[in-house]
Length: 157
Image 1 (cartoon, rainbow, N blue to C red):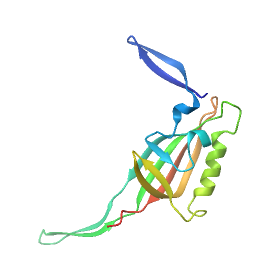
Image 2: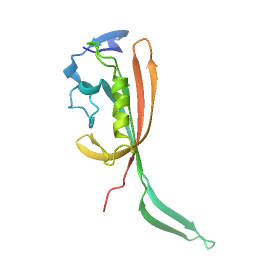
Image 3: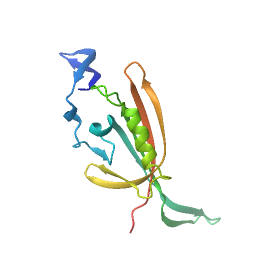
Image 4: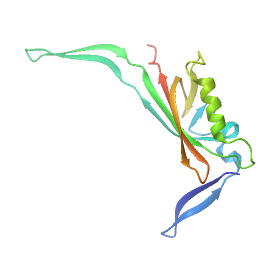
């Protein structure tokens, strides 16, 4: 059963440092973001944030006569950032860091031809894992944070 520290307000006073215990099934696959092979049950990894950046491929041409021409060439390859925490197992099993390392090695662009599938609020997105970083967020509580970068292709028209 994982334990999480949090601050809460009860009766107008803040109670910092309270501990909340959750059964493992509290973090089921019914979350807002799901990634193939990277779940709480499988890997002791919590997905904390997802950022998607997309932009168009265009050119503005400002002429001497003060006319502006816009040339549109479609969309650029986008970027998806996936971040979260890896924790130790309460039952003494493998730490989530080992699962993250294995998942990265198996899903990076150089090792996998197919994209990784994400489900965000019920919509599917596919991306290619192009980089990542892992750092120790809290050594005392054995928390590791990670950020992975994916290239996402523009939608076909």
